[in-house]
Image 1 (spheres, rainbow, N blue to C red):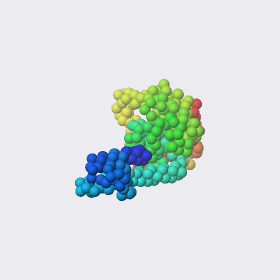
Image 2 (cartoon, rainbow, N blue to C red):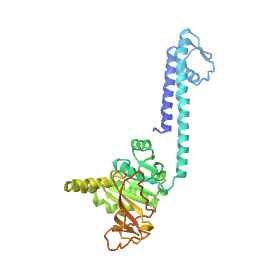
Image 3 (spheres, rainbow, N blue to C red):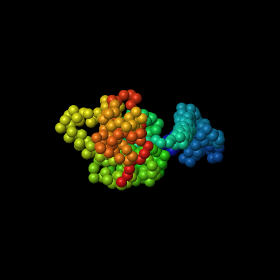
Image 4 (cartoon, rainbow, N blue to C red):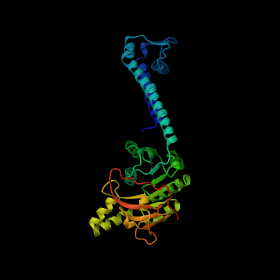
Length: 337
């Protein structure tokens, strides 16, 4: 959406054009007008007459006296006057009213926003990440998209998310997205160097948010973690491993692809252990447990250190996806090296 101030500027230029056209129409038929001052019209008088006429001031010191001049006023000047008022007054007030309404809405939105998710980048990775977190029960009102592209942000708002246009490496842009109140930040930029800068800026503004970032090259993953990311996903190598697995076993590749598509087929979810599961081994549980999160450690289901399930454990399980399948989010930040 075009900024209201720019809309007003365009309409002022259009109104000025109407004024100039009117002045030259009068100048072309200046012999049909009478000036109380000296009886004749020069170019300045024509602009003066156009101004007072279009603004409906009408002092009456310059008047059309010939039939041609009066017909011109009826069929040309009057429509131009109406057009001038529509452009300058009507649309300007509309633009300013829209700006006021938008600022009020944004201020109200910011005042109520807490523990939301900020997604930097609304490309393929960003869209997929949002789709996944929303499939687990996150409301669209709790997602804020930040992208430098107006088209991307327009697409995000059309999908029901809040959007902020700007460069997320700049702190003022992330502040507009209320990142200092965010619960989690997903960084899905197109460039690895941009992801590093965004991670540094987001971590500086919010020490407690969980930050997950995607990079293309695996060699940049340690740099992201040093910058403050809790988890780093290497998109290129992950896609390569999935390709290799699909070559070795197409069925295994299909299963893995199914697992990473939240909300369909099989889902991999993390949930807290329940009392009925305490004291049992992971293999004895009804759900298919693949890992146990204990404190800051992620243990395999067959790790001897697991022993039996404890009440404070969180279980990573594979379940059949249903419309009500939701992930209970872990509010603890992941350990940073």
